Length: 400
Image 1 (cartoon, rainbow, N blue to C red):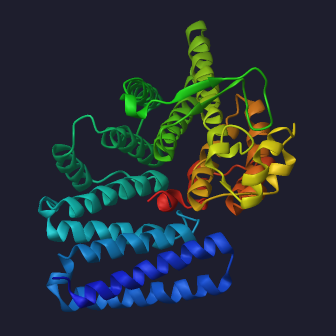
Image 2: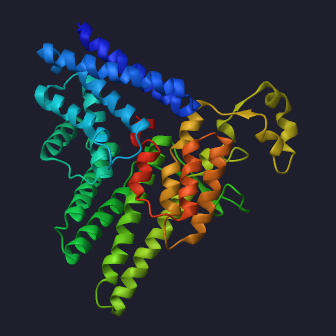
Image 3: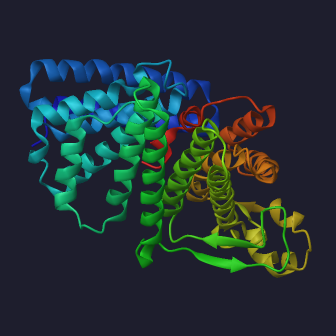
């Protein structure tokens, strides 16, 4: 039976996150004020429960509340490097897991909470340039033992852990240029191999086009089985973009010779190809006039005039009378960061122009303010760290 105190701070945490999400969507200052009040009350109630009852420490409700409070910070605080609160709750969640013992998470529902915690913790490390601690590696090993060896989400976290550790080592300046090259090449090769052996359930299909349009970067686009698959693969692509951009920098620091020129060009081509793959993932969710048309929630007027609208060449009439489900908006939101990742690639300026156009469109058509903010960052050409933008758009809070 659940502890009433645990249920209380869990309920308050749920209210805080729900109201924060509503604030994000509606721009309501009242919602944010109320959300913050619930957040503070949840913190106090949780602290009291943990101090007065050892059972609260071992209760899954406390871990859930901590994870929800972490999501609140991710939604409302976009500056991970300047705010300790951005990672405080995920570290608190780790303390709760350690106090209970991760091997005690055996029930299916509890195990899913542990899995979600591990994913969020690793993402926070990556964004904050922190090495993934040994205890998290042990937790990942425990999770791996209980999951199918071919589980893609679990397998994808391994190179992400290695990348987070590489970023931490770079910040601490403990690797030589040669070590940086070797580690980056190995990690890039590992991720590429992982991408090539995805199961059929993760495979996307490609549609070849005769003509380009505003919502398509090239003469094709890709369709994914699910938004989460698209987003996961785009994150891997972005990590590879960063690795290959770094390789160009590392190679350029060496005495130039013919072999290095070839390696630099290979890395640049990798960046161009990966940015193009990100662009190809956009129309499926954004192109309401064509590729994303089946995702629309039509109004009664649209249902009765559907055939008529099909005859309108530019489909401007359709734009004015169709609706988007919250799920469709979430699909589009998941593309904001990947589009920034592609648009910032220095070796592919054509993508920058197209990405800015898509982000402006997403901001106005889908009413996503973060899309407009990120478009402005690309337009201004300011040197913003990629993971700062990841934090700006809510990091993993909108896919949790």
